Length: 510
Picture 1 (cartoon, rainbow, N blue to C red):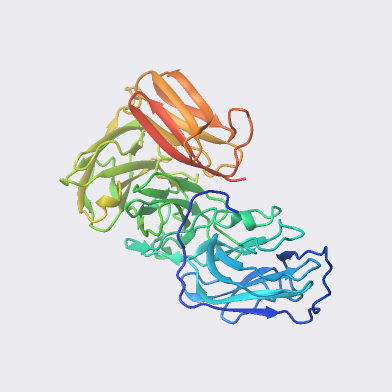
Picture 2 (cartoon, one colour):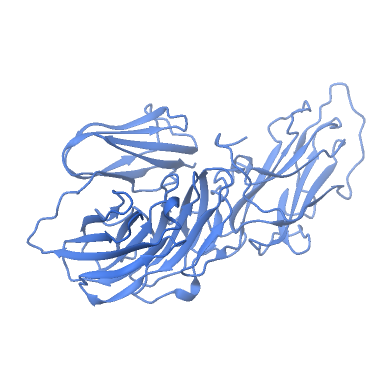
């Protein structure tokens, strides 16, 4: 009953839990069984209650939908209603209530006569902020021969209030949820969105026009992989953490981040963190706002530092009109591994770690070494943000000293070819209909791009053969080689050119 075969550990902290099974008032008694009669366990919406599944805070009130749900605190109550819609008594069976596809509490209710409705109550409970799926599964051992075996699950999504971040402070969070956990139990007529641990950027640090870039970086603990989405602010239990404005998807032990460098203001963002791989590992998250550099065309910024147990630093500056600029990240530390992303201010909204200006994503060399790139700018506002980040979990406790050197290339010099091979998913991810891929080649080379399932089997071949030097864009319609739509779930996009192999995650969600 999962959209993915991946196994996950729990994403919640259970402080106390109590459960009760009750016969709902006004229900009829047991009816006489017939020899050919069958039971049918199914979801039920009891009179006076808003849904088969509901949540509330404080007192257990399920007669109306909640107006608020508090994340990260132990005051969420939950109710799960089901009945016997068949013509025979259901005897030995178990009911499992779930959060994001993982069991909260499993009980054996005992016999339930035809027409009788029961409910299972769980309270109080702590749920991380963000979007989560409550669901239940009936007769999980398949002990009962039912007249309808397709209605034994039901799910509903709610949004809990996000954890507010403090600018500059690195926060350790428990493992975020399986993004697809429990979604298969939601009725097909209801729009489903991915589950996430929800957080909000520091509202006290918002700046005015052309001043501060708002950055959130996440770093999974060793052996894990978490991804991050940027959203507009949620406003209640059924609003927010739905359609992402930007999504950053890298790999195991690697930093992901989203950046909002706006030419209008520096708005607050909600961010959702999802687990892609790993078990119960925690992750680190940090919200920073860029330091504004007063000088126009600054030749350098720093020296500066990403301190031990921090992840990221950001800088904003203004420069004169030039089609390209050279940015050198001087690594002044002996063993730290740093990367760099470069953005131009615009009204386009947040961007992922690698959705930079052309040439502006740099993570090519190892610990203790410096990075450099030639960036192609646009004709927009002459304001830029440079984000410097630690590349992986092994770097978190290190003190990383660095300096930025900025060397504009004059307008009589033609834009340079890409200085290294690069590949990224530049469009929607998750994708429902189509997305875009981008790759850079410093010289003509053979290229292959394939889409693989989680077992490593090729489902679609997107490119094979020689490609010219330069930047290339490629559309992908989320279909296999036969032209059939890919099923919902996670896939890998593998890029190979010479001795360079890049693998990026792609999530398909219909």
